Length: 151
Image (cartoon, rainbow, N blue to C red; front, side, top):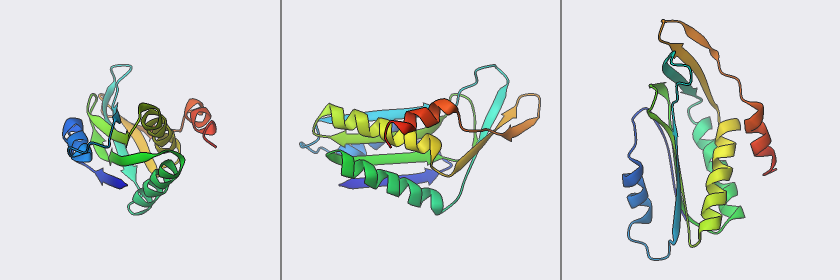
């Protein structure tokens, strides 16, 4: 199975990544794509700062991808996670899961995102429009509950 994992500062093109994953393959019947965006719920966010642990982040994502591969009959995965300063409405993460059928692709994509939100070594903090820098953002209980169903 083809697995692509990238951690980068640059934006990504989800359509181009999907085309690269499928590459005209006739055995792929479903591709589920999830793109996570930086949101500004209160109108105060200038940017979200994301940091990661180089080397460890890639290894942890590869470990999670291998778990997905062992649980579902996948034909390909692409996982891209950005770091650095990310502005509202910009992309943060892309997960593409390819399979012969839709259900494994949907479940694998959801599994991967639940793990990425809670276990991948990324840290984020808010940079506000008034110039202040917030504290590091804590994981949400809802994210931990979402992960618990896969354990």
